[in-house]
View 1 (cartoon, one colour):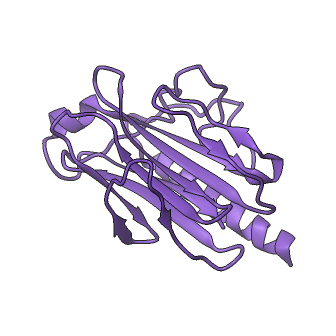
View 2 (view 1 turned 135 degrees about the vertical axis):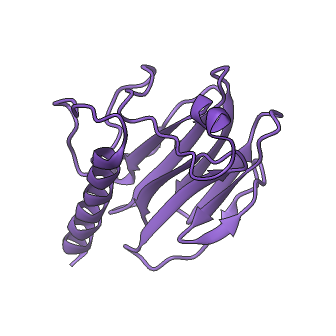
Length: 184
């Protein structure tokens, strides 16, 4: 039963990613290494995110400002943790949680500095929301549609059913938006 839930969650995540990639402009070929159950942003750190993986949307706010920001979405199968997804702010450490997927979304300012990040940790069902740069751009996260403001190193302690899909999104005051799908 758990395997069926995991496959269903992976299939949903892959479908969402394919839809997002296909609607991105300009159209770009997806690299042959694009594969796996998470189906999004499969590349090795510390290499920068491939162009097809970084996304911004100027649905609202100043399009020129939003276009200067970029995002990086990373998924981690926590069956293979403890593990880290390093970054220049404080790194990210995930604990083991069987049949679960963690999500980390990092927002980069035009300078290349980390402007903010959101992390979903399946073990303990914690969400961290960071606004790391005084750049005049505010941000918040939505977790399955519920709004969460930055709290720095203090996590939100949420509760999800085992195996539930968890949609993690970042929103900024200048119109940047990005999402990633995790699994509790």
